Image 1: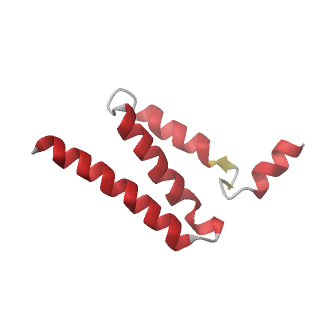
Image 2: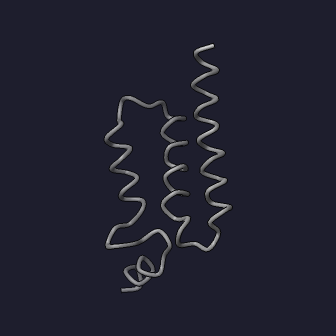
Image 3: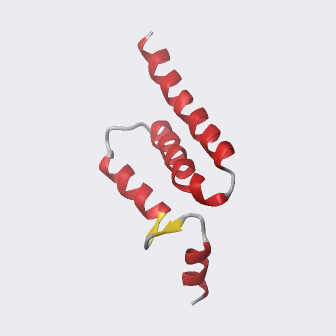
Amino acid sequence: TDKENEKKDSYYYHNGVMAWDLIDEILDYHEGNLTNREAGILYNIMKYLLRFPYKGQRESDLKKAKTYIDQLIGDYFDEID
């Protein structure tokens, strides 16, 4: 089907796994231990790390992931201070 072909051509689909499904499983694992903001940041970190080898924008995707990691670190340490 068209939807299956779209998945197979996507930089979010590899080795029979859709990135969104993997990310959802990881967020479910952390359910109740993350704020909505933390979950959103973690989602974006994983999205960029999972796609960086495939999209053709390695440096850009890694920098985006780092930006979100820095936000998470900043939120945590600002909260403690």
